[in-house]
Image (cartoon, rainbow, N blue to C red; front, side, top):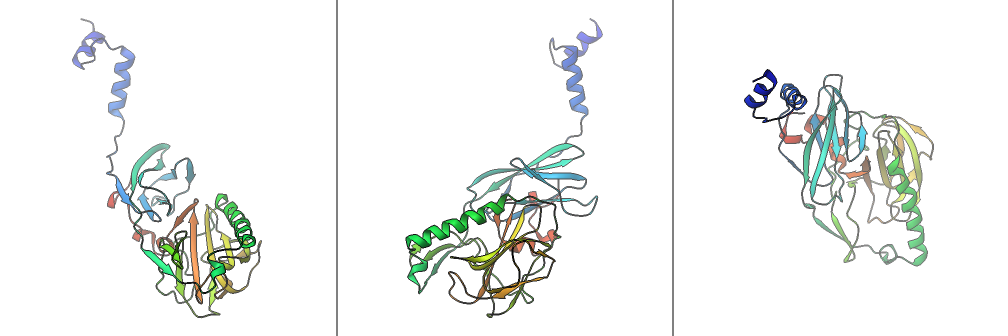
Length: 295
């Protein structure tokens, strides 16, 4: 029996070709990475994956750079508030190799919120107001696709000097008993006239008064991160302005559809509506893929 045939028999390949045997041996010699159990995540959250040496991170065709110093890279994945239950594959490229972990999005976990609005015209809109709100929504929607160089570091700076407990993110809202869209930001109680600051360096991409959000500011911080601030009583910036971390944007108010003075603060990252709390705390406190560890 020649050596090639003997090798085929001893490895259980039957009459496999020499090329197939060599390919199998090469595969056995490749480094194998441990499988990571599926990680349960709620919609509207952020998940981290420690990936030292990672060149990039990604999900569903989009790729971005990790955070952290060289050799301490971490991939962060934003899960959209309105994403339905099911699997979501997180990706990390380390040494040119694609590695994956499965995030399993759970059902919608947020509370129901009932709000009474004295101005019925803010709940059941007149045709002209519907048209205005649709135009404003279209302008805002164009921002979610912006992709420029990252200009922020984590954690983000607080939008208020003294940041109170914020809440109601994700709440399924009923206005005057009628169902409306979930709450995609957090509301911070604050006195009228309280200064509001940019959470990171960026470009003001919208600064105008809208039907629902009142006097509003949207800042592009690069890497697909957009911060938004609603219900101002007055604006300190205009579209096109470059702002630094901690720079004044405007003053707390109650313009638009609001029951009183407060700051509505929201974030979109890579198009995903997320609870800002995840980026206002140290990265190490963000929930980890598999509970800990990395690819």
